[in-house]
Image (cartoon, one colour):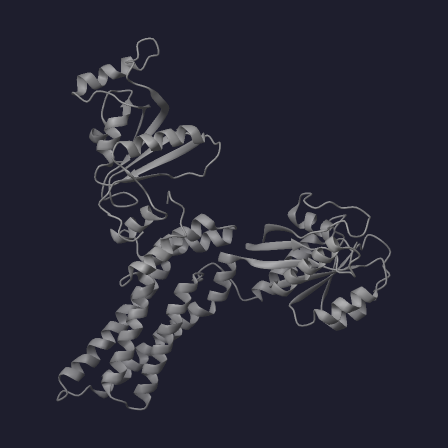
Length: 484
C-alpha cells in the first residue's frame, strides 16, 4: 500500500463474490458523495450530496444523467421508465444507497454504500462505473487502514477487524469483538500511563540530581512496576489459548485400516463427508475439514490407514498420513474394540507415545475383544465410542476440549491475546520491566532504569500503533480483503 495517496476517493466491492441477495459497493473519500451524484438517480429526485448522514435511499444506478439542476434531475426519474427513458441513459441496477458523512463513518471520511443485487455482473458494472467517475480501486485493507490513520481505531483494533472477519467459531468471534471494542487497548493504555508517570519521576531525578528521589518515591515506582509486570503476565498466560481460538488446532484421526476413522469424521462433522465401507483401505487420501468443538476451531484430518503399502498410490497415501501426524497438535488414535490388538496397533502405540494422544476405542456397539488395559497403560485415558451408532460422541468432544483447555480457560472476563505480533511486543515489554526492577534492586543509575521503561513504553506503542512503520502497515493490511 506504500506511496498510495490517502486523499484519493477509493471504492471496492465489500461483499464476497458469487450469487447472493445483496452485494455492496463501498465508496470512501472527500469526493464520495459527488461521485454518487453522477451515477445515482433517486426516486424522490434528490442528490446524494444533499442526503443527511445515516440515511438510506431507493433509486437506480445509471451510466449517465444530466447534472443541470434539481428540476432536470427530477425529470430523469421519468426517463427511467422503459418507454420514455433517455436513450443516453442505461440502468445498471436498482439499488439502495446509504450515506454516512465524515467524521461519523467507518473511515471517518464521507462514505456512500451502494446495495446492489448480489450477482457478480451487476456488482462489477456498478464498480466499473464508480471507477470511471473518479474513484481509485481500494487496496487490500485500505478502508480499515484509513480508519486507523484517521484516529477512529488504534492498530490493535484494526487487526481485530481481521480476526472478526476470519473467525471460525463463536469463541473466536467473541475474542475478536472484545479486542475491536478496545478491551486490550484500554488495559495497555492504562499500563502505558503508569509507566510514563514512573518515567517522569525518574527523568526529573536525572535532570535535577540535587533533588534526590525520596525513598517513598522509589518504593512507589517499584510497586507500580511490579503491578504492571503482573498484569502483563496475566495477559500473556492467556495468549496460548487466544492463539488457539484464532488459528485453531490441527487434529489427525489415525489408526490401522478399517477401525472406523471415516465414520468418526462423519460423526464429528454430523454429516457424511467420507465414504464408509467394510472394505479396508477405502480412504486413499487425507480428508480435511474445519469443525467447532466447544468453541475451538479444529482442522480435523481423516488419514489413510497406516499399513504396509501394497501399491504406489497406497504408499503415497501412507506417507502423507504420516506427515500429517508429525505436524498435528493432537492425534486421535483409533482402535477397533471388537478385535484384539494387532501388530499394526502395537506399532502405532510405540511410535506415537511422544505425541499428544487421545486414545479412542470404537465399535462398542459390538462385542468387546480388545485389551483395553494395555491401551490405558500406554496413554492413561481411553474414550469408548461407537462412531456408527453415534454413542459417546459428546464424551469424545469434551475429552478433546479438555485436552486443549486443560481446565484453565474461562472466556468471560478474560483478555485473550490471539495476535502473534501483540504477544511478541508484550513479552518484550514485560522483559524490560523485569530488567528495570532488577536495576532498582541493584541500585543502578536512574538513567538505566529510565531507558528500560522508555523502551517498554515503545513496545506498547507498537501494539497500539502510536508508532509504526509503513512496512508494518503494509504487512498487516495486505492480509485483509480489498473491500474491508
